[in-house]
Image 1 (cartoon, rainbow, N blue to C red):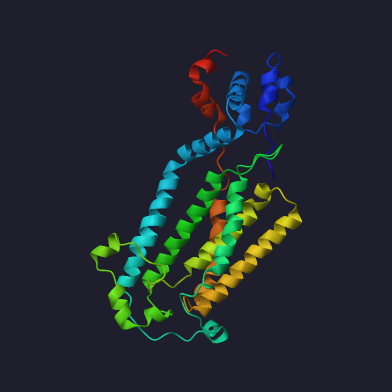
Image 2 (cartoon, one colour):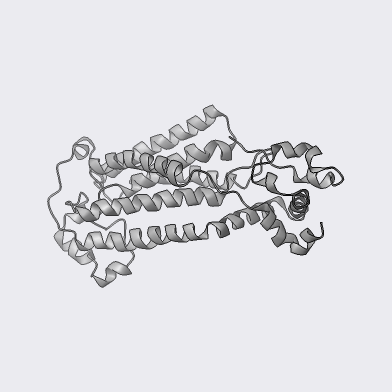
Length: 315
């Protein structure tokens, strides 16, 4: 449900009223109701002292500071371990073999693995996600929209966990590649990293081999759909029907991406199927067992940064 915005301005105007008589107190959240009357008026003055976009920026910064350890840990796993070490390690152990029999490859005609259509559905989904991110900073009267830091953090954590699960599967069992460049022994040896390069050489998603189970592209696409489904209605401020229409378009693009992946022979059908059920289950588990609620910014701390502690003590 959308959380009503606190009328800090009414708190400021009602400086001679008691806290209980203020009409806006009825919409205070549990976190904010713990503040005293003086603190709430201090927050009101701090909010009035800056542009609404600057206030929003301070809220986002506060969330970054409070969640910095989680952000750094997820970034380390995603950027270094899964995108460098694990991918290089998979290529280092990869053995060239004949392409496996696959029903998806029989159904869909083969296209050039570097064709422009391979990632086109993903590129078409990017604007939806971009608008979702940008809409978080566009104010909507009476509604506090989800915070961008929280959206990116939720996506990034599930993405990092998903890629770690991918690594556990493709490092445990290396299967013959489905892409043409993974069937050419000479090309494989030319691009194979040395043992030392495993730990520092940036891996390429276009020429890498041995990282099939399950599809990282589908992990990302499905997470985009789940993010839009989770946050879209709050961010876009649209009706339930319009939101469902947007989610449906995103889902169709996701299905189209799975088809072009098979056409380019980047993955086997099993890689697509596993990603299709692992990603939603991982999203559900993360949201219900690890990260149930998004963190809220501490407005008292923000007000102290803007106005100083002395002003608060003089209330």
